[in-house]
Length: 85
Image 1 (cartoon, rainbow, N blue to C red):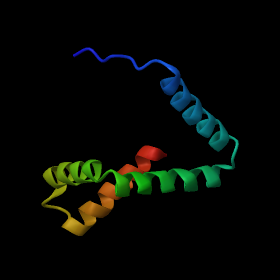
Image 2 (tube, rainbow, N blue to C red; image 1 turned 90 degrees about the vertical axis):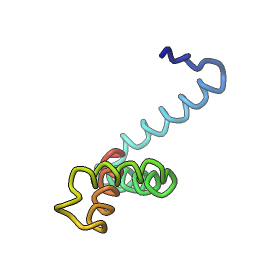
Image 3 (cartoon, rainbow, N blue to C red; image 1 turned 135 degrees about the horizontal axis):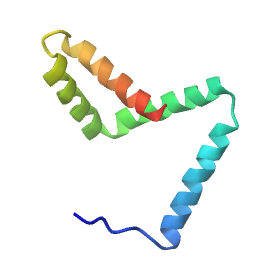
């Protein structure tokens, strides 16, 4: 499957905004950067419920007999937070 590259002024604007945000975060102290990354990960888990559900499904398949559903949900949230780190 060939993926079509997105080009044009809007794509460049989105790239410039994301790149600027990354550059700003890199200038902050490490503790502050981690706090921002954790907030982004939590936001990702809350806003993108499809990804959180997929993580819970995968972890349940792998660890369902060793952990309770509550522990698996907590682990899924931690996985999504670590993605942002």
